[in-house]
Amino acid sequence: MKSVIAGIDFSAPSQEVAAQLIGVTVLVDGVGGRIVETEAYDRDEPASHSFTGPSARNMAMFGPPGHAYVYLSHGIHWCLNFVCREAGHGAGVLIRAIEPVAGVDAMRARRGVDEARMLCSGPGKLCQALAVTRAHNGLSLAAQPFELSPPTGPVLLASGPRIGISKAVDLPWRFGLAGSRFVSRPFR
DNA sequence: CTTAGGATCGCCT
DNA sequence: GGCGATCCTAAGC
Picture 1 (tube, protein in one colour):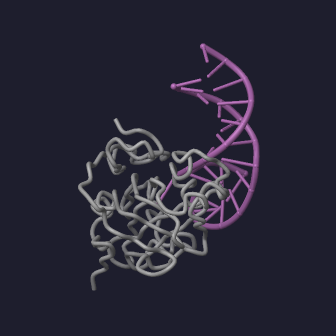
Picture 2: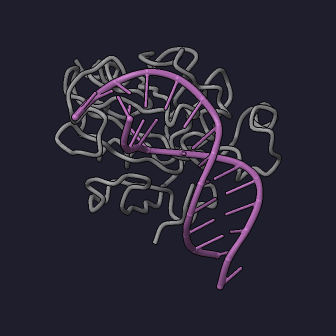
């Protein structure tokens, strides 16, 4: 069984899905925008939460593709991932930044800041802006409150090493929309 | 502009 | 008991 949502086959390797997600619009309860930055993670790679096998926290990452994996970072920030490959594999894509499009006022209220580029330019920030929490862990991306739609035009891709990790730092598994000012950090 | 430190929860050693 | 797929603030150059 294939899991294709918004034209993306989530049973593909996470690097491919991470690249294809750039330009895709994601809404949570009607609030969201275009994905401009992602990172891929996979089972046999020490920076991934799935590297050490299934656990209570990463269970959703070993669930079916096309579903959400949400975890708490540093006891403070929620982070949103999209599960890839087949159930049991343990691959995913971290959504790192979004260009705000819909429900921008709600984002401002939740974030407590005004500037558009400060609303969703980081994995923790965008979860706060879209009100993503543990309640979304394991939910399908093909149903409410999620709503994904494909890019409306051509996408210029940028890539580079992942951010904020100490292992497998050499893998160029961070992807972004070239030239976007809504990314968490510029690409080289 | 760059860097250092603190906040604060749950998992893993 | 240590340490993170983070973010914000304050201080240093």
